Image (cartoon, rainbow, N blue to C red; front, side, top):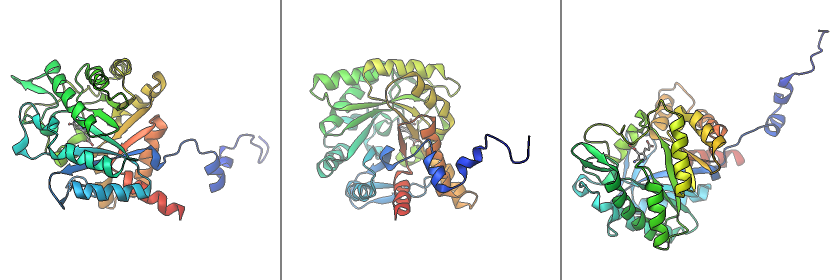
Length: 331
Ligand code: PBG
């Protein structure tokens, strides 16, 4: 090679910010994000979640304020989870479909106050279950079809509040079809389902279970959540959720499962969501607090990697912080 002669020099496309921006392949925007929020009963309550710095359990009045603040930053989609006191929990999660229970009442208020926001809910028994499992427990086993009846009631009660997307996170077989059918039968044809399609039995959910006090009282969730070793099984779940009527397919967790996000993106046609879960958030926050990582930069890189893997939508506890950073960079 003669001096200086080299036809391909990829560094030319990295030589300035303008060119780097021009050739950028993937972007994360605030519009791609859904912000999970933890709701508690009462008034003017705000308690930190110890394992999730910056995240709080909020009472309904403060949730309304939080949503307003987020909307002003451009975050327009929220997934609201209830933290339920032990005294309300029972074997059949009966509070989950009681229209007078604070979760359903708050959802109604939220939709009334912010009709333009997209509100998502969670369908699973664990926050309301005395056993801390996502399904009905009998003699140490999680019963599938008996659970569907309860999930169906929960879905209808949530749909009644006017929410936009229901998120079955329970991993019972046939629940998407069961819920879709019930919604349609009752006139809720416009209510969407974002199915937790490939939800793995993961150790990354612990901070979330702290937030909701919803850890299983015995055993683990391995008979319903997926084995982290499996890839093809995600395709089976995706196929079923698609024919059963899901509008979005979700992969959860996100980071240790980027290959699954890509797999579903390539092999299916529905929009793919990824849940950047509590443990993924906690790791970055903890390392930032120790001064070992730059939390903001790692957050952006993390969200970008999830988008690059193929996620159209990201559920993330970083949604508000990301939007704040975006806003600052626009100024
Ligand atoms: C409940 C549910 C869980 C999460 C979302 N919905 C926990 C679990 O399945 O044990 C986890 C979210 C997170 O870790 O951020 N079915």
